[in-house]
Image 1 (cartoon, rainbow, N blue to C red):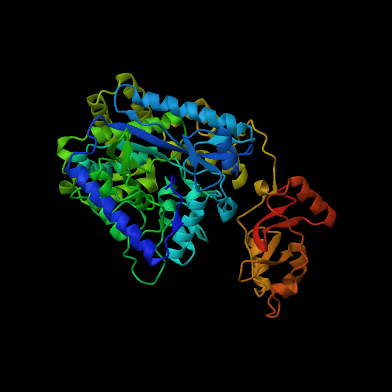
Image 2: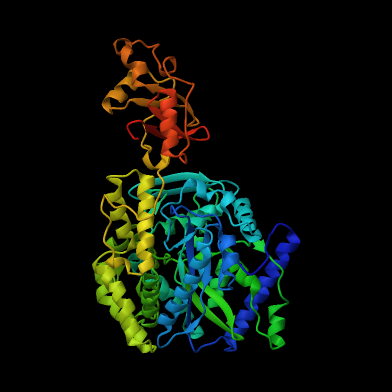
Length: 616
């Protein structure tokens, strides 16, 4: 979709024209398959690198278009979030040292991006979900100001007709309503592409589905979102919900999500996968297209199937079918969309090689995986891996096996054999697959993040812990040491970067609140039970309306049983408040000027925290 100027589909005539173009594209694809026009050899690999832009305090930096303009390289393009960019790497023939070549190109392009970003006081971070993202970074004002993203947002919202309800439950729980698709901008991935022989496409696609869970388990690195510990790879749950066009209702929702793993094994041809997508998901947007694809074939030209690719760009299967034209020849490939970005380029290339190795190393016994494995087991494996990472128990060959045993005993040897069989340099194979083996025996990115964050929280409030965590991830990323070799951060870990302390770093967010009609007895009991000296009062809309201090109520302990004694009789309503982005010096000055010991921290009229003289 990135190459087209898109508009929302509204008029009947436009919809009819688009469906006609889609039908012609499918017919053209069928003709090319039947006439052996799809390239069979040599096979190639490719990748897309998404990355985050952060400021010197490791918060998202909203300047992607400025950095992109300075980079001035066609390998780079935008993402939906104005703090993200993407690199489209060149395709490399699957042979010799192609993975090292891909790694070298990726390093060169990232260095180019870093040089441009530095001019804007910006750094580059590789991670599936940037730990320092907060709710204020996912507003529509942070969307990249390019037409296609706003068109997509409006199209999804029009289809859904209500806000997005995000609910993810892990160790912690995230439950929020959001009014745009900008939550998609929280996700950054390393998308690996593998060209597939057309005669083997369906068997290869089903195999890619079968191995997705085990591969994801060792690659996971995104357990945190908005400071909450959720899934081992939270991107899987978040992306599924962030562009869901299905509205919530009291009826069973039988429709498939636009972001999906699928519901069954594939049969027939690759065209049938496209047909299924078109049947399930209505077109959201349209564009200007080239002339009739079938007509182009008859005139000896190879069509790009732009209508089909545009529709495919709005259907987000975790293993996605792709059609492309390279060097004047049409080809088919599978795009692996579930591998996260980072935490280092070495880890990313290792992830890609592991997946490609298993794909090309498929034993003949698994050519008919759809006959020997229940699809629901493959799907369960995938979502279990997203939740639990390396702690997952998989269903494999009708047995229950741990992630560690399945990878070390079955999949790594398979990957070695597969890579050697297509002529990958043994030095490269050993280098990158050893990264996977070390990760299995030590920890993956998700394990490192969780252990480090929990340690940091013993001495720091969440916002400071997240910035220290991200700063240390950045430092380790710059050395390109694989994540399996990273020492877990201890509770006293700091950073070499100067991160100025703000209210958000020391405020308390685990707050007890009361309603103005609550009894004084309840408030006094809570304050005594929990050793609390200040109690915010909020209304039904969660807005701050008052504050009670222990000094306000301690002299009324004797008469708390009187039914007329309620919070509103004692609370202060003329409040001095502060926002979380103010400096600690400003907070101290307010406390001193007004001779108070507590400042409610607000966003608009809503309470988001409390900072006291004790915190300072």
